[in-house]
Length: 87
Image 1: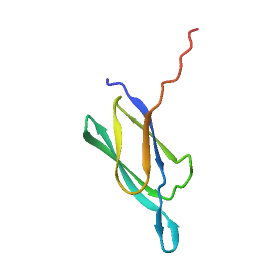
Image 2: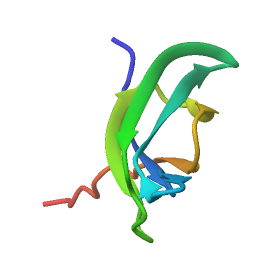
Image 3: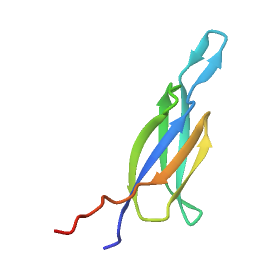
Image 4: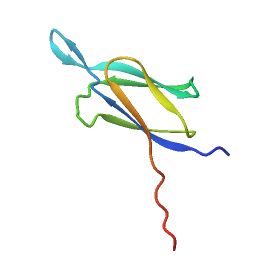
């Protein structure tokens, strides 16, 4: 069985600007394994929070993410495994 890694995918500044003001938008993020796309995550809505909008993602170790379309910026970070205590 292949080990799995938990990641946190965060998107920032997901919104559009029209004559009527700020509105929601759509963005697509490609999940890549060695440069090959293995999954695609879609976001739809409006996020202007300085903390962004976070979504957990589980996959094999070593994955990366790339914003393929839409506004905003992303961060894709592997989470550290929980510390184990020796008893």
